Length: 408
Ligand code: GLN
Image (cartoon, rainbow, N blue to C red; front, side, top):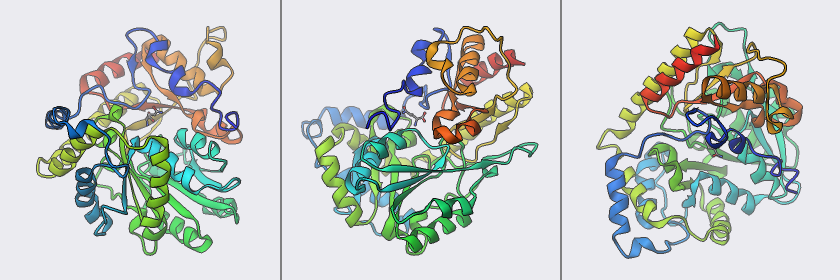
């Protein structure tokens, strides 16, 4: 069972962990920040640690203050007066929320559709719970001079063909990891129509919802007609507040989705980190008044510009992301000596694994090979790309860009 989920193979995060790379390697691989959460949120965490109650178990649903803050922050965006008792669930990172939905809903043989490339945790979460992954690749339109994430397109005939009577859930990750695609209203409407026609659920993984660039609209599929009823929306304090190690995430959806998922999560972790739930609540309560989200977005737009302008100078093609904090660099033209000493963990994998390794060893910038986010049959599409994360301070990105010029 573990084998089916590729869980026994060394995972990509471990291979390209900076611990395995040259000591001064700049980490643009695994997506986490090299800066701390805002000081006012850290102060709230400290305050929570200094109170007795917040150091102990929370209700398995999550602390009421955080659920209330989520209701106030996301309710208007979802056009819903959310019920804090039955429609919001706090989880140990978005990851555990996703996992718990599968624990709650998958019967052996139930199919889960995911667009490729997909965040690799989905695959293990589905197969560990006896589900069957069904893959629908996004097709990169690479003839464009300057492709954007919008040029990774869904073939709706392919999607229709992937649907069977066993289809239980489709995962819609927007903004998308690793492409940065922000699904358009039209795309989401078509997906929604199929979900309603064939009666399956939607898992809307929107953990990068605060990072949508160029004024593009982030459409929540749960807000489309008839979709609240069949959608669970996934959110993350880690992405929103630069606190990926806090492991605070949440699910929002109708009570009949949240309730069984609560039963699952109660048995998996019982409840999530209590003091950091309190700090996350303060984050959401004050984010708007402090202008935090807008300011952070602007900083990310600047970070994206540093990296992509660096790629422009390098003369290598990449996908300009409209959301999230990743850029896919097309590494298909990168060459290395035939005898280059790649480790065994890299040799058995796609060409992109060698490209990422070569870049890290030669110029000291790590990235994540993208074929890991594909099934075996489709992994050739991913072999052309390495994913670079720009959730780093401007200085670090500038240094990385300078080093990458060494590839020219
Ligand atoms: N979501 C992050 C990324 O894609 C972290 C993934 C992980 O650590 N498994 O980089």
